[in-house]
Image (cartoon, rainbow, N blue to C red):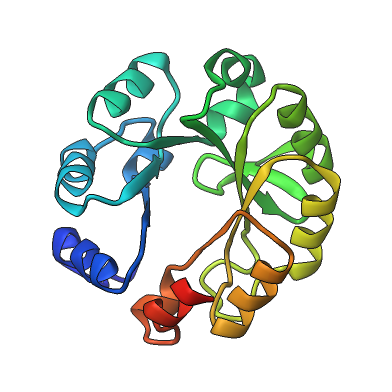
Length: 208
């Protein structure tokens, strides 16, 4: 693990100053241990940043969903629970619910990427589409954190095949990557490591 910032609130203000409108947050302890441990910080970021905030990591019960919504989180990301209990997603579906799909070797990965399920990407996207999920964040684990560019072929296929708001995650490392995803008419792209390591200027990224 690399720590890029000790104060997330200061970091969020830099995002605001760069013209960003959206903030993507993942509770890593929650993702791995089924125990959302960073709710206080997430609540502070929602309150102080003024950004549209989406959060994931350990959201596996309606109780946790209600708690996050009460904190003002704009959109919640359901990952492992969506794979293990698709019916849960069907019951939770709404404008404030998104599904996070992590892919490893062509299969959907769960529990902080430590396990893979029997679903292929297409099988799971088709199921989520049937359940009227509005937004899906798709991460190609092989690309995440590599700064080698996103899996454009994967995203182009998914964008053309399924009527969902698709957010690309993993490997987005340059303005050229962002431009390529924008040209596909993707709903959004998540920038992480590329910003923290100075490879992407956020002001330029927002404009693109």
